[in-house]
Amino acid sequence: MHTVLSTREADKTARFKLWREVLYDRMGPIELSHLCDEPFEGLIQAADVGSLRITRIRESCVRSEITADTLRRRERTQTVFALIQLAGRSVNIQDGREAVQTAGEIVVLADRPNVHVSGVNDRSLVLELPIAPLERMLGPTRHFTALTFGSRGGTGPLVRTFFEELVRVHEKLPASSAERMAGVGIDLIMAGLAERLAQEVPRPLHGTVLVQRAKAYVAANLSDPNLDPPRLAAAVGVSLRRLQELFHERGQHISDWIWQRRLDAAVERLADPGCAHIPIGHVSYGSGFANQAHFARRFKARYGLSPSAYRTAARAKTP
Image 1 (cartoon, rainbow, N blue to C red):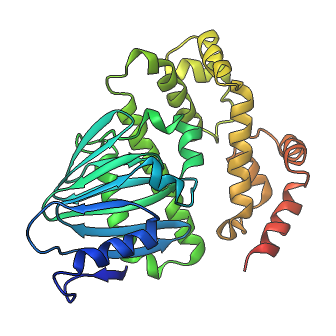
Image 2 (image 1 turned 90 degrees about the vertical axis):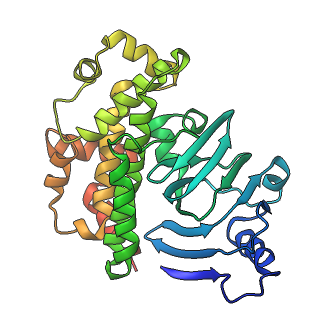
């Protein structure tokens, strides 16, 4: 990672002002206040891994707030922030919830009003994640903001270890590998959030969590050509009729969802230079299509090109 700012050599009276200016440049308007009488010390390091932006921050006793006013003055991005606590303790407030983070715990904050308060010698990794795959898998962000996960085993410890190792080795990775590793990291965070949402689910969210579990099962079993709505309902322990109702409430059909996820997986492989050696037939079967002709028909109906033509066009766009 490269160092964006270290306040160590700056004049003690000017450190926090400098800190505020750098964060403003990186994140847009944000209200910051230093809560300690001790001279401020901070460190910002950054890395871009594929399309994933990762920032490592060390600070003490800082209150950061995004308000309705600061939101109006900043460029809105289709991203959320995942905060991985490396050391210290912090507090996050959003959507009516307050999350206390200790080392190893993870919290997601959306691009809406929120408050983050760091404790003494706070160290964290901040990941800027695309919002679309998270909402596609987990539903609206208001369901999972300011919920801590990672302290009770499960996927959480793996998330921290994965990203710490990724920022250590990312400069040695080819661009295509870095992009794939970024995707793996995003999938790990989604898995951790899904585990957290499954714990002590409030009744109004029960249907949402069932749909999330169903979608996670689809993502994990796309290569199974026998995966269909009845099998999916059985896998998540609910009747087919109930699962259909839950999908319909969200403007979706189970079978359409499964087929679209299969096509999404195929498109990713066809556009990935690292998968250029894989025959199209293998891409088809690996995405859960029973035969290549069926795959070709659905693919062309959705994207207007045959799979081979799509791969050729994607290759031409690759620098």
